[in-house]
Image (tube, rainbow, N blue to C red):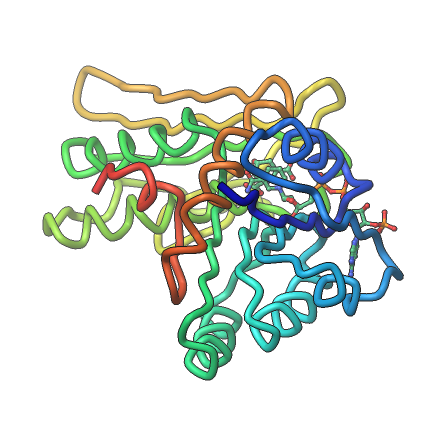
Length: 250
Ligand SMILES: NC(=O)C1=CN([C@@H]2O[C@H](COP(=O)(O)OP(=O)(O)OC[C@H]3O[C@@H](n4cnc5c(N)ncnc54)[C@H](OP(=O)(O)O)[C@@H]3O)[C@@H](O)[C@H]2O)C=CC1
Ligand SMILES: O=C(O)C1=N[C@H](C(=O)O)C[C@H](O)C1
């Protein structure tokens, strides 16, 4: 069986360098390119890359995906910063290249994917729900992509169930004190030396609370999800948003 030809973009970064090692260690994959900032994207075509693993920055990701999709190179994307406008632009590119697949995974770790699922299930059963994400202080975006997605999924679950808005009597507040409002769900971001990537979903009802917490303690937690994404994206044309779709959780 021929090996999947894989490239990593953002190969010198925190998660990118771990992904390079994971692809090199995977028996069914061959690392054909490891690109950093300033390296030519043409290398992807020249080396015959079938899948690009995109782990750069919100400022770089769109240019890289434009190139990949135009060249029929599938992509597995962990980079954050996804807005409705960006997703619409990407879908437009994919319409012009209907055999190409792109997976965007707000989080590649199984625990984080399950946290999102559990939060979605629990959200309609509690009056109050808030999300707290905690990350290393080198992270450039807030709130995290995972927390944003979690809040969107919670909001959708509550909408579908006809849940009332969460109670909150706050009449005065300093800017930011109640967090960011993501689809009506407060999301709080902590940046702390010593942390990597952590999230708590706090749910409250009369007389009880439920906390769903996940901790990524090392970048290795993201690698099985990235490798699964690479294996599945080559046979999944179009846009897939969320690793759960490749885990058959839906
Ligand atoms: N989905 C998931 O499970 C996870 C997602 N992430 C996300 O992945 C992204 C990267 O995170 P992290 O590794 O911590 O960040 P880093 O800053 O450590 O890494 C990003 C790397 O990308 C490089 N880069 C920037 N632009 C380009 C470009 N155009 N082409 C190639 N390389 C480029 C940077 O170079 P330079 O240093 O020169 O700028 C840097 O080496 C973030 O958006 C983060 O949120 C992170 C962990 C898990
Ligand atoms: O920047 C990080 O480190 C991470 N980014 C992703 C996010 O924003 O959700 C995934 C994980 O939280 C680590």
